[in-house]
Amino acid sequence: MKPLAVTRRAVLVGAAAPLLGCEPAPPLEGGFAGVSVERGHVLREGRSWPAPAVTRRTEVLIAGGGVAGLAAARALRQRGVEEFALLELEDSAGGNSRGMQVNGLPCPMGAHYLPLPGDDAREVQDLLEELGLRRRVAGRWQYEERHLCHSPQERLFFNGHWQEGLLPVQDVNATTLAQYHRFAQKVAGLQRASRFSMPALRTPFTPVHAALDALTMAQWLAQEGLDDPHLLWYLDYCCRDDYGAGLTTVSAWAGVHYFASRHGFQAPGDAVSDREAVLTWPEGNAWLTRRLAAPLGERVVAARIVVRIAQLRHGVQVDAWDPVRQTLERWEARQCIVALPLFVAARVVENPPPWLEALAARQRRAPWVVANLHLRGPLLDHPGAPPSWDNVVYGSTGLGYVDATHQRLDPRPGPTVLTWYRALGDVPGARQQLLQRPWTAWREEALAQIGVPHPDLPGLVTRVEVTRHGHAMAVPTPGLQKQIRLQPLSGGHHALSKKEQITPSTGRLHFAHADWSGYSVFEEAFTRGHLAGRL
Image (tube, rainbow, N blue to C red; front, side, top):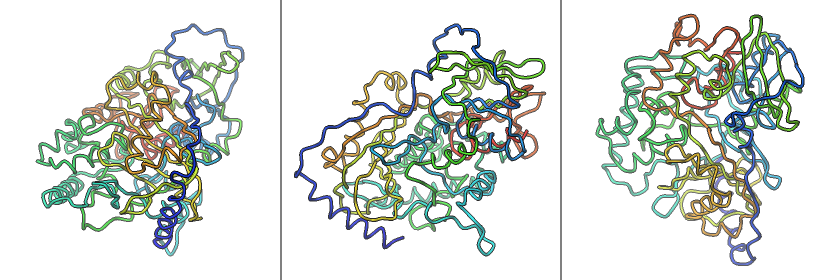
């Protein structure tokens, strides 16, 4: 892969120069796309619903078509259960792992990569094998090279030029390097003291976990004497990237778990683990969710807003609003898998159990903005590390951008889409901003931040599509893991049963969503959906 990276850099830099100043900037089109805010807010309106226009029956109903709901549907089919339906709010399933096209080029609207799963995520490993993404060769697992992130993977714009990797290392002093190594030692020591796993439900909640869960990541770092500005910036970036909020908001358990459940933390000079490789596609994780949804056919019922879930004596009754036809649809089923965010589930389940209401009230959520910028040609590049898949600007409030065409094998330059991410979990009044600001305000913010290393950007952008996620992900704040893990569930059981966490359930309702892990990543959502579908 290295020769391809070098050739691609030379071509991009050389090809960009003729584009500068030679043509007038094209008109910049765009708008909001991908998520229907109006549908999401139907439940807040407090309207009274009409009598159902139609009643439909099925064996199992899945409420929610994100990763957890799709995983539950796959698990049902593995069990031989084919009579089920999946209700999805948007026009297509996939939740935060959906994709779109801008001027014909695929790009993500949310989640854009999947780290190579460890052995604790065996359900995800099985899925990847089923999809042909990995296979056994001479007794070892080998991943399909085309789907691994092409080299170079990531770079940081730091001190006026690009450096390889996202940890600031260029021209930093000995004190900074020493703190990098101290943090690596702390993570390694915690890994030895208590196991961390992805998904988190595969390990018990130990006193080591509880001590970390009681503090914010910022408090724990201060307690450990880790105060280097470059280290703090990097760790804050990691927390915002995975959890939607920074060091002063997320728990130390979450901040450590980011590294300890995967490949640890590599300080400069340390050996880099192969597990740092990631799978990615031009459309992001939509590549996965579309393949999960495809076999379901008409069992995916899109554009349905679940407004009521009730348990009856012999089954479950679910009411869903059809915003297109403006009618109410009633579903009757023997069982229901509630693959909805906790705050939605607590609102639509009739007579919700106290543990559901308590966790929903406790959980904080991070809004996100994702902007997809179509470029008619390549950008002029600064010296340093070559153009990469993930490109981050040091000190920026955004999370940088990924290049949708980085995965293509053809190194010749051409139009592309840059996907820019902004997590708002720490921003006061973020949800109001999300709803009130025009799309042009988010466009200008994205252009300003990407324009720091790319001042030629405005003359190359032709269209910007902005996707707003008002309740994108649960934020793992201090104390949340303790409440989740020790919360009494159905039948007086606790969240941990031997080495497996019981799928939260009450009667004929079985709950499956990444929210039940306290944070939102593919492995958590998929595993919980799979376990609910196997009940």
